[in-house]
Length: 457
Image 1 (cartoon, one colour):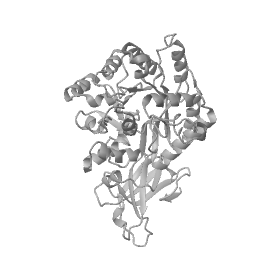
Image 2: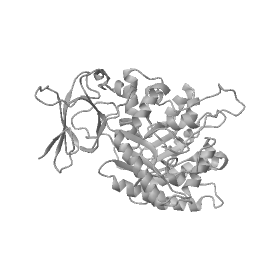
Image 3: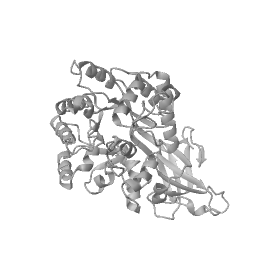
Image 4: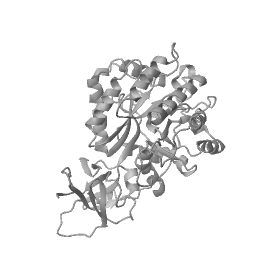
């Protein structure tokens, strides 16, 4: 058996060892030796300093990161030369839909692969080992995005788990044929080997018609149940108190159609609600009523702050300069006050829906310190959970561990090592040794480990 210390471990039967690292969830100022074998953490022992051994600097180990909600096919449209003429002029949702529709008419396998590959590669470099990738299927692109997504899933299978979600960004029902062609297309798509989730966007149905939104959701739920898929609704994307929330209706449908909710049964699948900015207008009473409606359903919520802050609450032209209402799902409150699972996601990268930001989930946790006004040790720990363990659970990953950050023997060897800064000199105090250090100011030097193998450094 070959042994690799603080380096690559790609040989069959090899073990991976990190010595003297700080570990998320362990007592502060303690260092540990971590040994991985066969894709799990085999041993975790408190480090005994050896003056004769070379120093590896200060390193901090935490669970690997996760994208619970990211659009694979629409990424980097603003920076790719093929779409250079599609410039943002207004920055509103209608323009983003129009620009994206124009871009989709030009999609070809080569550029879908090129842009998708860049997103996955950059994500792995940031410490991502699991992601739910939305690939659109509609009457324009048909299966182009899906086929590219499935090819990328296979290409990266040894470095990252890519969960393909067939996604209906366009309406399902609002057509002259009442959606027959679209539904037929989607049924073919979700039956492709390698597809694990199905998602839709009820609010894009014509004029936001509630009856059509209901039909959209019913089709999505029945389809997911029929093909044994996880379900993902992009829903309630508004800040209008006069527009009724549709999540309660979705929950009623899930119960009525007998969503497979038994965690111990092989048919169990997760349900994820994304965006949900309308819920920021809910009172405590409405949240408690919503929690009651969930009643055992495997439901989670994902907030998308970079997209929401850019897109939501745009003032009218005649409004004064102070009119800048913003809204993004209060993820930490959902967890702490109502006992529900929630995560934070990137959503889009480099397109008209979200022109700013990177593929780094940890940057969202750091942004969350300000957005959610959350800076205590417990709160930063929760923020890290929202881009790691909680995010994985939200997309239906069966965790052998709890959502809490508590790395131990027997856990999957999926983690990120941050640091390798010098232990001496004027900047030594800047080394990240705690979750709070890391969330407040994410380190850039990272080593990503997936299934006990170093996949990026």
